[in-house]
Image (cartoon, rainbow, N blue to C red):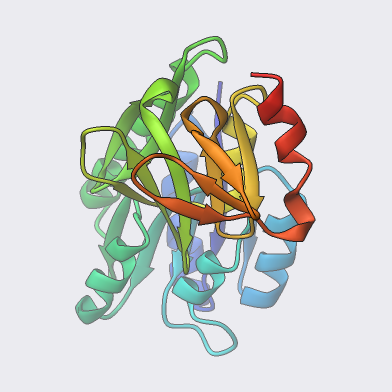
Length: 230
């Protein structure tokens, strides 16, 4: 299976170099390339993409801002002429960060990282009772049964785990809900998802998990019906 890839870079020469490099990898399929960030973002919002090569410093939209705006984020490899953007790129859990001019050997290492991550993600079967997320530059496995609740914190999710420190990952609430079994988890607020079996009580639209109380917004009161079925 090929990794569906897209390039977004406003520099024609850099765009052409990446095209030529990608052609050397049978494992990569280049779907589209864009020299306009806005057009590239529109494509990403309506098409399934596995891997995005994107320049950070572009005139219309910064590459990092574009990635933050995506609901379903692909794997990302940032490219830029400026080394000082590296931290910002890695804060978005990028697979890698390539400084221009990009040597083929360095590009190859980045593709290898993406291929390994893609393989791990594809090997995860739906019947497995685990949530897999990217955190601290690695793929982390979290058993569903260990999750107490999930909290949205700006662009990140904080996954609160029983008897362990929380795991921070760059993901939207919508994306993580698609990975969680609906029979076990419910969204109770725009900022919270809870595991139904961990709920001790519900009083005055507050969920008690034993060690923490979370608010229930009016938009998500339906979850109470699900909880009473447990």
